[in-house]
Image 1 (tube, rainbow, N blue to C red):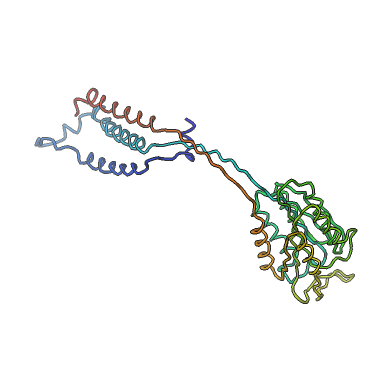
Image 2 (cartoon, rainbow, N blue to C red):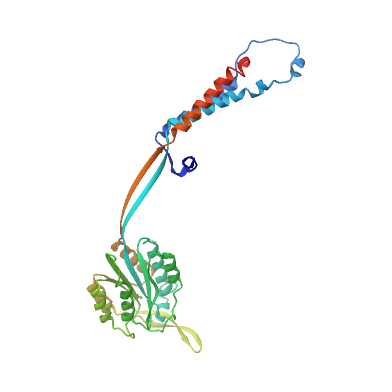
Length: 334
């Protein structure tokens, strides 16, 4: 019974037999014509109209209904309904990733729309959605570094943490070394075949406890691949600044330590990218997504169970019932 109720898993081996259903409208038309009976001329029908209609006459159309039902059941049986049960085994060669995101005050610069921070959050969310089989973590850094989300397959939690990012969550500054070292720490015990860090910053290392070169050596020791992204337009950008008089905006130079970011990426087998606007930042994440593909091997086993027999039996039952009634109860009317 469950197989009949679960129509999502019902298929038909010979669906072209359903074309035979076109016979039914022709049968209805032919039945509606009725049969030509001998003509009896009478002067008035008043006496006949007053006669009660017999039960047999009222229920005689049931014979036609039974024949139609028998035909429908027979056509369904010929189409061979089958229930399918598919078992899928997935062998995933996943990638462990850590997103290292700079949240310093300069990430509020408006050379990206609406600013660098919001643009970085949007592309990170899109990147996570494209990688459902990977474990991904989130590290933020400014004057110090902090783990917002450990490496996890629970992407809903990860995305909530990405959406909550804002400047001022930690001491201001740009501690690239600390951000890289904390990202490495999240992956050093990973058993994944591929371990990747995407480190994004818009400035130069100017604080922190660990130098970027020391963090680089640690990443190399653990065989981690680091992609680095420099965020910021060429020249100057409008940046909001907090003053005793309130928030003001002023143009400031965009200084990104590109030689350092290129060195980190080059020595770990990664690649350095420069994002100067929203579109280029999205393109960079798309390119990284293509380069770091997850290998998924899917094996599908499909089993079929034949369901035509009950329909064939119903066809026999309806047809037998029609013949029985026609030559017994309704015999005098045929």
